[in-house]
Image (cartoon, rainbow over all chains, first blue to last red; front, side, top):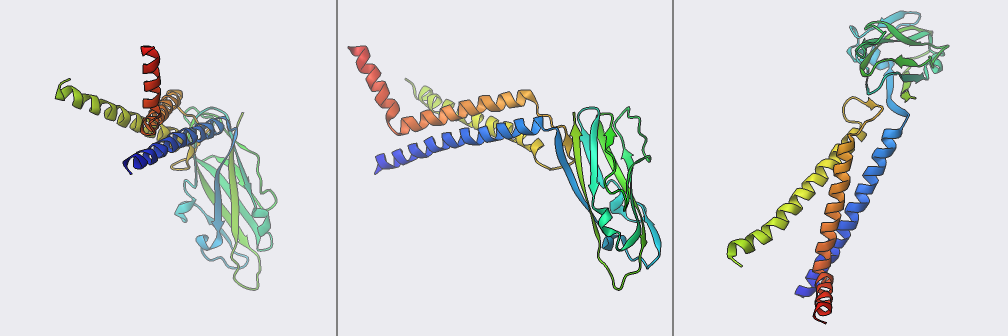
Amino acid sequence: MAIMKKRLFGFALLFLSLAVVAVSAYVYETANIAVTQTVKNIATLTVQNSALGNIEEGQTLSYTKATVSSLGNILSLTTTKDNVYLHLDSDVNTLSTYYSTYTITVKYAAVGVGSSHNVGDTACTMTLVSPDPAGITLDKAGTWQFDFEITTTAKSVSSDQATTVTIIVTAEST
Amino acid sequence: MGKEEMGLRKIVPIIFFSVVVSVWLFSMLAVLIPLTNWGAPTFPLTIDANMKAIFVASTVLLASALFLMSMEKLGILSHINNLLGHRKNE
Protein backbone atom coordinates (compact mmCIF):
# COMPACT_ATOMS: atom_id res chain seq x y z
CA MET A 1 0.00 0.00 0.00
CA ALA A 2 2.83 2.37 0.93
CA ILE A 3 4.62 1.56 -2.34
CA MET A 4 1.40 2.20 -4.26
CA LYS A 5 1.00 5.60 -2.59
CA LYS A 6 4.63 6.46 -3.33
CA ARG A 7 4.17 5.55 -7.00
CA LEU A 8 0.98 7.57 -7.28
CA PHE A 9 2.81 10.54 -5.77
CA GLY A 10 5.60 9.96 -8.27
CA PHE A 11 3.18 10.01 -11.21
CA ALA A 12 1.57 13.17 -9.80
CA LEU A 13 4.98 14.87 -9.67
CA LEU A 14 5.75 13.73 -13.21
CA PHE A 15 2.43 15.17 -14.40
CA LEU A 16 3.18 18.40 -12.50
CA SER A 17 6.58 18.77 -14.17
CA LEU A 18 4.95 18.35 -17.61
CA ALA A 19 2.24 20.85 -16.63
CA VAL A 20 4.87 23.41 -15.58
CA VAL A 21 6.59 23.06 -18.96
CA ALA A 22 3.28 23.32 -20.87
CA VAL A 23 2.02 26.37 -18.94
CA SER A 24 5.37 28.14 -19.23
CA ALA A 25 5.58 27.47 -22.98
CA TYR A 26 2.06 28.87 -23.45
CA VAL A 27 2.80 32.02 -21.40
CA TYR A 28 6.13 32.59 -23.16
CA GLU A 29 4.62 32.21 -26.64
CA THR A 30 1.61 34.44 -25.78
CA ALA A 31 4.00 37.13 -24.50
CA ASN A 32 6.11 36.91 -27.67
CA ILE A 33 3.02 37.28 -29.88
CA ALA A 34 1.72 40.24 -27.84
CA VAL A 35 5.07 42.05 -27.98
CA THR A 36 5.29 41.77 -31.77
CA GLN A 37 1.68 42.93 -32.36
CA THR A 38 1.49 46.07 -34.52
CA VAL A 39 -2.28 46.55 -34.22
CA LYS A 40 -4.20 46.23 -30.97
CA ASN A 41 -7.82 46.76 -29.98
CA ILE A 42 -7.61 49.31 -27.18
CA ALA A 43 -11.26 49.75 -26.21
CA THR A 44 -14.86 49.50 -27.34
CA LEU A 45 -16.80 52.55 -26.18
CA THR A 46 -20.58 52.87 -26.15
CA VAL A 47 -22.50 56.13 -25.88
CA GLN A 48 -26.16 55.62 -24.95
CA ASN A 49 -28.67 58.44 -25.19
CA SER A 50 -30.07 57.42 -21.80
CA ALA A 51 -26.77 58.51 -20.25
CA LEU A 52 -27.07 61.93 -21.88
CA GLY A 53 -30.57 62.77 -20.64
CA ASN A 54 -33.79 63.88 -22.38
CA ILE A 55 -33.84 65.74 -25.66
CA GLU A 56 -36.93 67.17 -27.35
CA GLU A 57 -37.70 66.98 -31.08
CA GLY A 58 -35.78 69.61 -32.99
CA GLN A 59 -33.74 70.55 -29.94
CA THR A 60 -29.95 70.83 -30.16
CA LEU A 61 -27.99 69.92 -27.07
CA SER A 62 -24.28 69.82 -26.37
CA TYR A 63 -22.70 67.60 -23.76
CA THR A 64 -19.24 68.07 -22.29
CA LYS A 65 -17.42 66.53 -19.35
CA ALA A 66 -18.78 69.42 -17.27
CA THR A 67 -22.37 68.24 -17.85
CA VAL A 68 -21.77 64.47 -18.26
CA SER A 69 -18.75 63.48 -16.17
CA SER A 70 -18.23 60.14 -17.95
CA LEU A 71 -17.26 62.02 -21.14
CA GLY A 72 -14.06 63.19 -19.42
CA ASN A 73 -11.00 60.95 -19.84
CA ILE A 74 -13.21 58.51 -21.70
CA LEU A 75 -10.17 57.10 -23.49
CA SER A 76 -6.71 56.56 -22.02
CA LEU A 77 -3.63 54.97 -23.54
CA THR A 78 0.03 54.75 -22.58
CA THR A 79 2.36 54.55 -25.56
CA THR A 80 5.89 53.19 -25.25
CA LYS A 81 7.19 54.61 -28.54
CA ASP A 82 6.74 57.68 -30.75
CA ASN A 83 4.32 57.87 -33.67
CA VAL A 84 1.56 55.47 -32.69
CA TYR A 85 -1.67 55.86 -34.66
CA LEU A 86 -5.05 55.73 -33.00
CA HIS A 87 -8.08 54.82 -35.11
CA LEU A 88 -11.66 55.45 -34.00
CA ASP A 89 -14.35 53.65 -36.00
CA SER A 90 -17.93 54.43 -35.04
CA ASP A 91 -21.39 53.46 -36.23
CA VAL A 92 -22.79 56.96 -35.64
CA ASN A 93 -24.09 57.01 -39.24
CA THR A 94 -26.79 54.48 -38.22
CA LEU A 95 -28.47 57.21 -36.12
CA SER A 96 -29.41 59.43 -39.07
CA THR A 97 -33.04 58.24 -38.65
CA TYR A 98 -33.27 59.86 -35.23
CA TYR A 99 -30.82 62.78 -35.40
CA SER A 100 -30.15 65.50 -37.94
CA THR A 101 -26.89 66.26 -36.13
CA TYR A 102 -24.80 63.89 -34.08
CA THR A 103 -21.25 65.09 -33.70
CA ILE A 104 -18.69 63.52 -31.39
CA THR A 105 -15.63 65.71 -30.97
CA VAL A 106 -12.57 63.98 -29.54
CA LYS A 107 -10.26 66.34 -27.62
CA TYR A 108 -6.85 65.83 -26.07
CA ALA A 109 -7.05 65.76 -22.25
CA ALA A 110 -3.43 64.71 -21.74
CA VAL A 111 -0.59 64.39 -24.24
CA GLY A 112 2.85 62.78 -24.26
CA VAL A 113 5.74 64.99 -23.13
CA GLY A 114 7.13 66.99 -26.07
CA SER A 115 4.11 66.41 -28.29
CA SER A 116 3.10 68.97 -30.91
CA HIS A 117 -0.53 68.58 -29.74
CA ASN A 118 -1.96 70.65 -26.91
CA VAL A 119 -4.47 69.75 -24.23
CA GLY A 120 -7.90 70.93 -25.37
CA ASP A 121 -7.13 70.69 -29.10
CA THR A 122 -9.51 68.68 -31.27
CA ALA A 123 -8.03 65.31 -32.27
CA CYS A 124 -10.84 64.21 -34.60
CA THR A 125 -14.57 64.47 -35.18
CA MET A 126 -17.15 61.77 -35.86
CA THR A 127 -20.35 62.83 -37.60
CA LEU A 128 -23.36 61.23 -39.27
CA VAL A 129 -21.71 61.59 -42.68
CA SER A 130 -18.16 60.82 -41.52
CA PRO A 131 -18.30 58.13 -38.84
CA ASP A 132 -14.71 56.89 -39.30
CA PRO A 133 -12.27 59.82 -39.15
CA ALA A 134 -8.60 59.73 -40.10
CA GLY A 135 -6.23 58.27 -37.50
CA ILE A 136 -4.86 60.38 -34.66
CA THR A 137 -1.06 60.54 -34.52
CA LEU A 138 0.31 60.11 -31.02
CA ASP A 139 3.67 61.64 -31.86
CA LYS A 140 5.42 61.16 -28.52
CA ALA A 141 5.57 58.24 -26.10
CA GLY A 142 3.67 58.81 -22.87
CA THR A 143 0.20 58.88 -21.39
CA TRP A 144 -2.56 60.10 -23.68
CA GLN A 145 -6.09 60.86 -22.55
CA PHE A 146 -9.10 62.04 -24.51
CA ASP A 147 -12.39 63.75 -23.72
CA PHE A 148 -15.54 63.51 -25.79
CA GLU A 149 -17.86 66.42 -26.58
CA ILE A 150 -21.18 65.54 -28.16
CA THR A 151 -23.65 67.76 -30.02
CA THR A 152 -27.00 66.32 -31.08
CA THR A 153 -30.12 67.61 -32.77
CA ALA A 154 -33.10 65.28 -32.48
CA LYS A 155 -35.45 64.59 -35.40
CA SER A 156 -39.20 64.02 -35.05
CA VAL A 157 -39.98 60.55 -33.75
CA SER A 158 -43.27 58.83 -32.92
CA SER A 159 -42.07 57.54 -29.54
CA ASP A 160 -39.07 57.55 -27.21
CA GLN A 161 -36.08 56.00 -28.91
CA ALA A 162 -33.10 54.33 -27.29
CA THR A 163 -29.94 54.93 -29.29
CA THR A 164 -26.39 53.68 -28.88
CA VAL A 165 -23.19 54.64 -30.65
CA THR A 166 -20.40 52.08 -30.59
CA ILE A 167 -16.84 53.25 -31.13
CA ILE A 168 -14.04 50.75 -31.67
CA VAL A 169 -10.62 52.13 -30.80
CA THR A 170 -7.51 50.48 -32.23
CA ALA A 171 -3.86 51.46 -31.99
CA GLU A 172 -1.30 50.86 -34.71
CA SER A 173 2.46 51.13 -34.65
CA THR A 174 4.86 50.78 -37.54
CA MET B 1 27.17 12.10 10.15
CA GLY B 2 25.80 14.34 12.94
CA LYS B 3 22.13 15.07 13.59
CA GLU B 4 22.60 18.71 12.56
CA GLU B 5 24.14 17.72 9.24
CA MET B 6 21.28 15.28 8.58
CA GLY B 7 18.74 18.02 9.29
CA LEU B 8 20.55 20.44 7.00
CA ARG B 9 20.62 17.88 4.20
CA LYS B 10 16.84 17.59 4.44
CA ILE B 11 16.13 21.33 4.74
CA VAL B 12 18.40 22.65 1.97
CA PRO B 13 16.52 20.94 -0.92
CA ILE B 14 13.18 22.13 0.53
CA ILE B 15 14.44 25.73 0.72
CA PHE B 16 15.89 25.46 -2.81
CA PHE B 17 12.60 24.04 -4.16
CA SER B 18 10.54 26.74 -2.40
CA VAL B 19 12.76 29.50 -3.82
CA VAL B 20 12.50 28.06 -7.35
CA VAL B 21 8.68 27.80 -7.09
CA SER B 22 8.44 31.39 -5.79
CA VAL B 23 10.72 32.76 -8.53
CA TRP B 24 8.78 30.84 -11.20
CA LEU B 25 5.42 32.15 -9.98
CA PHE B 26 6.68 35.73 -9.59
CA SER B 27 8.36 35.83 -13.02
CA MET B 28 5.31 34.25 -14.67
CA LEU B 29 3.08 36.95 -13.17
CA ALA B 30 5.57 39.63 -14.25
CA VAL B 31 5.32 38.34 -17.84
CA LEU B 32 1.54 37.75 -17.71
CA ILE B 33 0.27 40.94 -16.06
CA PRO B 34 1.23 43.30 -18.95
CA LEU B 35 -0.79 40.99 -21.26
CA THR B 36 -4.00 41.46 -19.26
CA ASN B 37 -6.28 44.46 -19.67
CA TRP B 38 -5.91 45.61 -16.08
CA GLY B 39 -5.30 49.34 -15.74
CA ALA B 40 -4.67 51.75 -18.61
CA PRO B 41 -3.84 49.94 -21.86
CA THR B 42 -0.23 50.13 -23.02
CA PHE B 43 0.85 49.96 -26.64
CA PRO B 44 3.19 48.69 -28.04
CA LEU B 45 3.59 46.18 -25.24
CA THR B 46 7.06 45.77 -23.74
CA ILE B 47 8.17 42.96 -21.45
CA ASP B 48 11.51 43.18 -19.66
CA ALA B 49 13.99 40.81 -21.38
CA ASN B 50 15.66 39.99 -18.03
CA MET B 51 12.31 38.93 -16.58
CA LYS B 52 11.74 36.63 -19.56
CA ALA B 53 15.20 35.08 -19.03
CA ILE B 54 14.48 34.55 -15.31
CA PHE B 55 11.13 32.96 -16.23
CA VAL B 56 12.76 30.52 -18.66
CA ALA B 57 15.56 29.63 -16.21
CA SER B 58 13.15 29.06 -13.30
CA THR B 59 10.93 26.93 -15.55
CA VAL B 60 13.89 24.70 -16.45
CA LEU B 61 14.95 24.40 -12.79
CA LEU B 62 11.42 23.71 -11.51
CA ALA B 63 10.57 21.18 -14.22
CA SER B 64 13.91 19.38 -13.68
CA ALA B 65 13.44 19.32 -9.91
CA LEU B 66 9.90 17.95 -10.23
CA PHE B 67 11.02 15.40 -12.82
CA LEU B 68 13.89 14.13 -10.60
CA MET B 69 11.57 13.98 -7.58
CA SER B 70 9.06 11.94 -9.58
CA MET B 71 11.82 9.58 -10.77
CA GLU B 72 12.94 9.12 -7.16
CA LYS B 73 9.39 8.36 -5.97
CA LEU B 74 8.84 5.91 -8.84
CA GLY B 75 12.07 4.13 -7.88
CA ILE B 76 13.69 4.76 -11.25
CA LEU B 77 16.45 6.96 -9.83
CA SER B 78 17.54 4.35 -7.25
CA HIS B 79 17.42 1.69 -9.98
CA ILE B 80 19.80 3.77 -12.12
CA ASN B 81 22.04 4.33 -9.08
CA ASN B 82 22.15 0.57 -8.48
CA LEU B 83 23.02 -0.12 -12.10
CA LEU B 84 25.82 2.46 -12.02
CA GLY B 85 27.07 0.94 -8.71
CA HIS B 86 27.20 -2.55 -10.27
CA ARG B 87 29.18 -1.29 -13.24
CA LYS B 88 31.68 0.42 -10.92
CA ASN B 89 32.13 -2.80 -8.94
CA GLU B 90 32.70 -4.79 -12.12
